[in-house]
Image 1: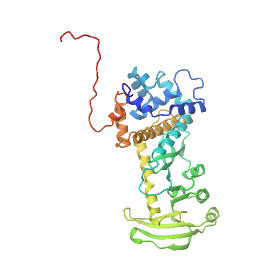
Image 2 (image 1 turned 45 degrees about the horizontal axis):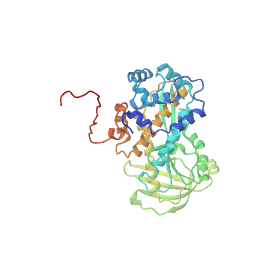
Image 3 (image 1 turned 90 degrees about the horizontal axis):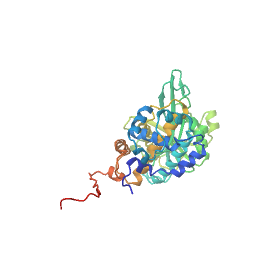
Length: 388
């Protein structure tokens, strides 16, 4: 029953708390902890994400103003900005990373049948990275350039539902192509990347894993045409070729043949050249697959606008990673709630509604209902009626 429960409490009811306790035990999160638990820390940071708090002092002031309602929302420890700062500084960020990974697995199962524009049986992933700029004097560990600091959010996005399946946080100086070495290749899957990931030794690793890749070729690519296949030039396709790499190092790293597709994009007036190891799908489908890669750019833009991952409550690597992973877990949790409750609103609309109604005692479905409902409150009183 949701009667008398706040929206925040109902939202937390979708969390697998047993799995959270296992993550805490795995990294000894409660070692020498007396009152402010890891779950209290998670609740504080989740509240900050959902209500767009600006600082630790802001979080403390807002939560303390709620008084006894905090207990019914799940808070057990006293909220203090110094205690929260110490928790973000000292408690292992992998607790929240593992917990977010569990939520991601749940979300992927619910969005497995989601349509992303192409009817394909294989899993399709987009791989890219985004840079979050930081102040060099406050974040000296996040090396990027001589007078600038930054971190990179390397993301593997499942295009069915726009769910991130792999996230790696590194200093800004780490190149994107290094993530390919950490990638667990899924047999039969298709990985769509831009030309920043054009490293033939890494692409051959995907080939050996019985998976496929789609990427763009660089202008100075040395490739020798072996075969040409017929194409319908009215669709924008210009050529579909089987090539062999010509350079010594490129041929050494990738000795197999590749498929080169040249496509004219009438909307942007650009000629795009794609490389893939998939010789089965039609050439036009390969071009549309690369166009679907734009979903990861929209994902990066969305989380930067609507999650607190550009301004941080702490300056240490542990505090930054803790905040980002809790933000990702909130994004995935809202996606799960949207699917389980069959909500028609977008994630943006759901987050906006949550930001102003977290501690209202309203059934969750009613909070997102398009029509206006009135809550009938029955007051029971022992006072007798003097006038009959």
